Length: 95
Image (cartoon, rainbow, N blue to C red):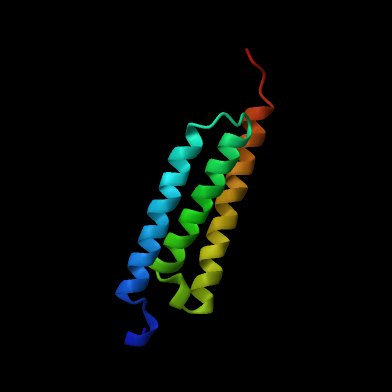
């Protein structure tokens, strides 16, 4: 990785401030009575935060395409495991 391929300090601070703003939005969302949309909104904010962290702080934005494909494959595999977990949990009886 060349020296020009990395984020500048200003860019990192900007991403950090955006992450703090998303944290404040998540905190504010917990105090709203939105019913079923509270967890949906919080999960959406969490996905945005995770995407920013992976793209900037983990360096996926400046990495090779193979590393990006492997990272996306890991995300799909994790989501597949979560779907299997939810399928198992939701099909069990209450007893």
